[in-house]
Structures are given as C-alpha cells and as structure tokens.
Length: 70
Image: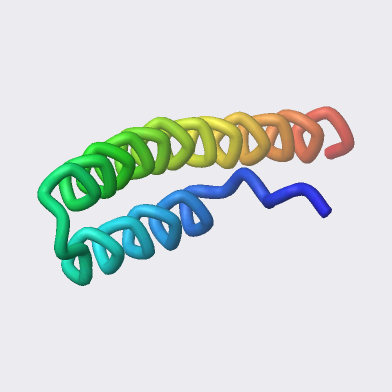
C-alpha cells in the first residue's frame, strides 16, 4: 500500500524521525535521524504550499463555473 502524499503524512514522518533521534544512543544514528526529519519537514512545507495552491485554484474554478451558470 502506497503512503499518502499529504503534508500531514510528511509531518508525521518528521516527528517519527525526531523521536528516533531522541532515543538514539549513537551520534551517527541521531544525526541521520535529524537529517531525515529535516528532509520530511521540507517536504511537508512544499506539499502544504501545493495543497493551498490547489485549493485556491479549485475555489476559483468553482466561482467561474457559478458565474457561467448564472
């Protein structure tokens, strides 16, 4: 089953990596988990921008449809 590509999913993955980093005893493992968390956070930010742009585009399209049907 494929993971859902949403900003919420990406944030959850970042939080999981942060928890792994907090529990890590080895410096290399902690650093790797923190790098992964940073990457997940960056993906979440990009995805959130896409979600907002999509919502705005859909809203505008609906407004145009309403005007055309009026």
